[in-house]
Image (cartoon, rainbow, N blue to C red; front, side, top):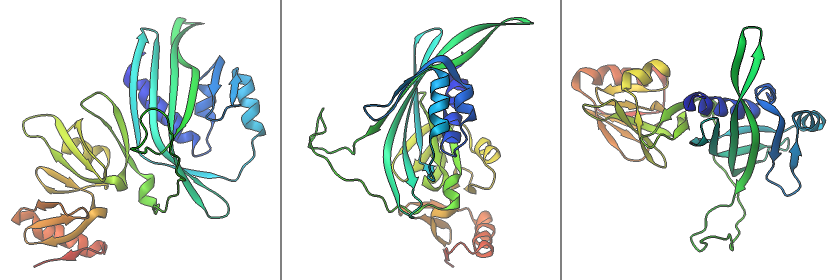
Length: 274
């Protein structure tokens, strides 16, 4: 079982799940799968039992996922544990939205099946364990002694539905909401990048041309070393760009007029300088 394939498949399953498309989820389950939900009574075993339980579930909820962080460990050559962390926004028919952090662990095993062409291997999920994370309080160490109600007023835009997938230097995989990316910077003389988000800076594998090709239209090349997210550009001056966090990036003279024209034509609310 290839680690990257399982990571991307795990991300795909959960993102489709929260679009209320359950087929990839069901298709990946083993017959004896164990599902452990975040509440005390949520324990189901067997694929058919899960399918019946979900078929009986009726709701009018919709969901939006935040950034996904993924880690993988391999306790055995035929078993892989894929661990995901992400915020999930639940939208209620009343118009209210709440958010909580969720953690999801997939246990994948390799199963050999006999076909007309011989024996083949396929990965299947034998356990899913879901838990909801308490908001961290610095007064707590091991036990969540201090509780705090969670509420969120973060605006969600159509742009928020777009995301990028990157692999960090520690081999973790991150699905990052496009709105959360400020800019991306190349590390000279290497095939690595610094992805600057609202919350952190990640060192990832890749190149700027590679990202431009993989995610056309999401970012703007303002310099040989920088891609910026147009959503976070606050001001263009001669010859620099200021982002929403105050970061200033250089814009070469040859690119300045073109970049300024793009923002004026698309009416992105950016204040152009001289």
